[in-house]
Amino acid sequence: MTNEEVVARVEKDGVEFIRLWFTDVLGQLKSFAVTTGELDNALNNGMGFDGSSITGFNAIEESDMVAWPDTSTFEILPYRPGSSVARMICDIKTPDGEPYVGDPRYAMRRALKRAEDMGFDHYYLGPELEFFAFKDDQGTEVLDHGGYFDLTTLDAASDLRRDMVNALESCGITIEYSHHEVGPSQHEIDMRYADGLDMADKVMTYRTIVKEIAHQHGVYATFMPKPLHGENGSGMHTHQSLFRGDTNAFFDAKDEYFLSAEGKSFIAGLLRHARELSCVFAQWVNSYKRLVPGYEAPVYVAWSRRNRSALVRVPLYRPGVEAATRAELRCPDPACNPYLTFACLLQAGLDGIENGYELEPPMEKNLYDLTPLELEEAGIESLPETLGEAIHVGAHSEFLKRALGDHIHKAFVELKQAEWDEYRQQVTAWELDNYLAKL
Image (cartoon, rainbow, N blue to C red; front, side, top):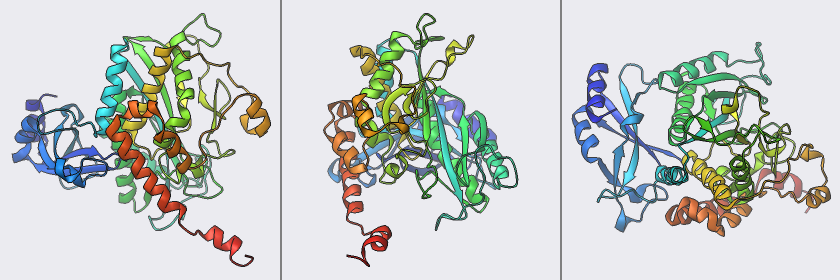
């Protein structure tokens, strides 16, 4: 949409306020509203704000920032009954009009520009976000005890999911299907694949709408990776492919796995850099409570076609649907910053293509059944076991520094190190239960 078309849409739909969205380095949504009288100025000149108050942005002596609305992201928000409120997602720039290097959306734009320079027109993404719905945000009292694909009275939230789907679709997000997930009170609503930046925007919108519609139903939706002990956590399996025009660059009809050389090298890049990427796609202390063997969250750095215990799965080829050839990375969780995660995944895959990384044969055994010695003999590494280990690996990664840029890399590592330091000093209930009476 042009600036004029946005203004016309605002007038036609009686919009009263326009929310301008962007994210901080950790992926937390930030927003401020402008009135219709200020809209023309926002579209043509951007809106200034104090960047020193945004997590991971500049210090106070360099704090002037400008939010520039991306008119292609204009949508009417579906969860504001009684008033018409729209939103646009912003690119953050410096006062002289240059992209701000600390803007996560800019990190995604840089990765897409690299793909374009290498001859790829599209980086398609299809993330599958899971979430839990609890009674409130004060605890983890579940709404039901349903299981995977249940459609009985055990699934108490089918109406909730329906309203979420309707709200998402009204905001321009096409939904393929929704269902109850494995855990009690756990759900999944799957978006149709989209281009890289568009999908990162949609993930931010998805998370906001899901939470808002849950609130309207008097419940609380959370994307916390592992809220329930002894149950599956919430993941964000991320399907990826590269296209030249309408041609899937990952497909090769003559290959035994139906993967092109570029497709294999892209996957090899994901695997080679997986440990370095872990602090980005699993960025919270709680993320590593999910990434343990036995709960459908892969931790072993390998790929497969059928085996879902591997980090990367390539769904089996079906004749006539060559365009569906893709790599599914199964370790990210839905609480990550999607701009940084998708940018780093793309950069890792492009590294693989550019440097001709070779892909090892697939691992079709259940990796959870292998002993540590068997894994070592097979040369299979594991993801970091804690956020502390992940940050140590990421802090020393030249690849991650290139993918994120110096500013975001430094800010992200410092924030995550502080989080880990605070966490590891806590005395937990488990320690008191197991040690107090006997030590």
